[in-house]
Length: 287
Image 1: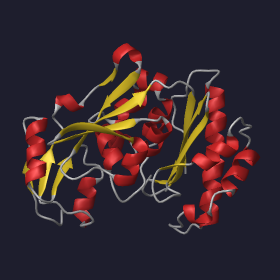
Image 2: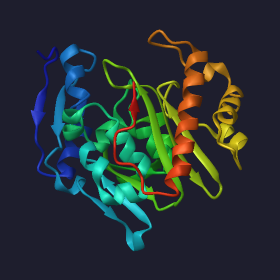
Image 3: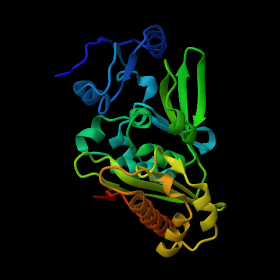
């Protein structure tokens, strides 16, 4: 039973969808619906109008950009597609691994890239991987299209009356990995980390243990040049203020900081190993 009344419309194109979103206060985008619909049922979310964009082909597809310099992932790409697509496995393995770790097969078959990036009020898997990959989020509004960094998008969310249209991942090189400890009931991350080792040093992002998906630049600086041993990574995390880690679900800030450090050490070690062999395709979620 859905506890809030709303209208429903299925626009013929993106322009009509944007007109509806900008012209109706309380309008919400319906993509995969794996977060929005349960929240409507419980009353955690309310909407006056659902704008269903699931049929818009212009928001689908995964392809390389000009000269292979960028990967464009349409917002309606499902998590199942993201997890197994050859271009993603080769160019953004942290995103593929985050998609594999997300929920269960039903969630992955229906949930979308745009929805996972834009969901508010809880930690999800893709934002942290997108930050580690140095990705950008493409947004469409009545004034046209623009891009923001994945890090900025994690901080601000989608502005009103906009639609996430794509995730843009640069061909930055380096090896990458994702690690997660999930809540057993919800499969949302208690803590998750994504890393990418580049010639300039590691990029490290964490979610679940923190208020939102964050890039940990000070940890990166402490680990620049290695080694990526568990002891070294934990020492780097101990340099972070405890208030960075938000207690919840029976956990303490100290526990979450330690857990995030352990997961980061595993991810960095996995990324080092991945540099010498093809990326793994199996799930790497730990509960």
